Length: 349
Image (cartoon, rainbow, N blue to C red; front, side, top):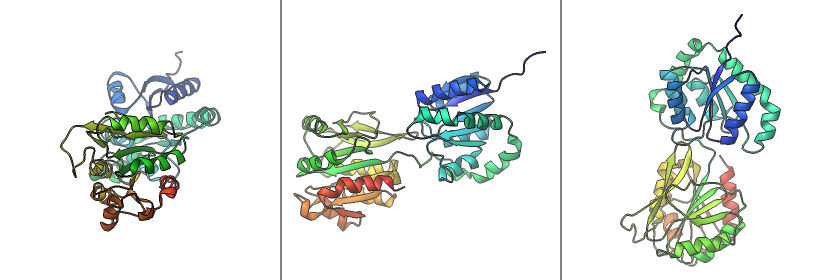
């Protein structure tokens, strides 16, 4: 008598640690893990070549997020999917989107303490995948289709990343030296435009790196914006925020000056408005002129939290004043309190 065939699972997660932990856990639980993909595009290629019964799927991944992939999968090749992500808190909008798109089960993993999590919750994950393998997809596909109208088939907006973008000019070196050292090692990732000529920004980044718990360095195209890291836009070129799946990166590029500046704060802020929306926090600080004011207004209109340094602590109250005049600012904050307000804004979803 031949042994029963084991359920074949494809693990899709951008974390190598999670891929290995899930593979070991599911293998010990009696499954056959036929592959592990770092993002949905790799998963799509694997699905063409490998027999798969169930998928475990992360939400935040490069190139394509998990919700978008799930919707495409359920419309073309429906199969049981268990979402496993830090975004799938009980009752969260992402959980509802995943279930509406056709996910059979949802497992919430922590951001920290993954080893303990898999040790303590491993059997729950195994049972969730077993239940998914027995799911009657025919009974749920019509509900998933009606719950996700075509207009929502754009990439997800929600992500756990909060991005801080900062614009600063005259008096800015001394001001930023009072903000960054007050931020902890795990502060939200930052991108900073300080009006400076080419070659000066690398020295600024090196100086700030020696003063801070965060890592500070000059930005390079393709750098991911990560918690605990501040990227300084290089002088002589523009820097903008771009998105790959659920991750944020910077692009450094050549283009004419904007508002007489290169890098321009408006270029960074406008890219944050269109790319990060409400996941962004915008801060405009001491500086002459109005660079950044209109970009900060666009950020505010897209749901970002916005702050401006107050007049009393500014060396030149030009850029913040213009942003306030345009109605772009939610909070006006003294220099000494900016770090505290940034951290508070990052905690509010």
